[in-house]
Image 1 (cartoon, one colour):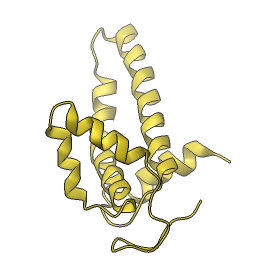
Image 2: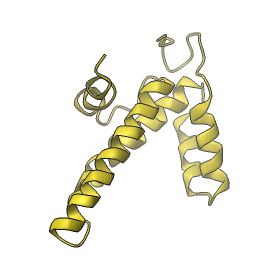
Image 3: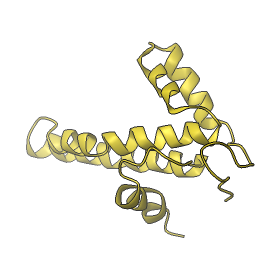
Image 4: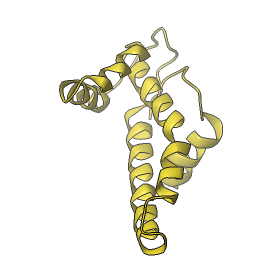
Length: 119
C-alpha cells in the first residue's frame, strides 16, 4: 500500500481545508510524519543552497491549513469539538493534552461528526 499517496497527497488534494468529518489515527499520524520528513529534508536543502530556511518555510505555510484541518477532524473522531484545538495555545499542558487525545482510538460508532471510519 502506498502510504504517502493515501495519507499525505490525498489529504492535500481532497481535504485541504475540510474541517468537517473525521480522521482516524493512522491518517493523522502519517500526515504528521510525512510533513515532518519533507520539512526536515527541505531544511537540509535550504541550509546547503541558501543558508536560511526558505523552501521549508514555504512548505510549512502551505501545509498549515491542512494540518489544522486534519487535527480538527481527528478531534471529531474522538467526539470532541474542533475548538479543543485551541489548547495548542496553552503552554506545555495544552500540547500534552492534544498529543494524548491524538493517540487515543476514535469512537467506533457514528457520532455527530459522521460515520465511524474503520480501517
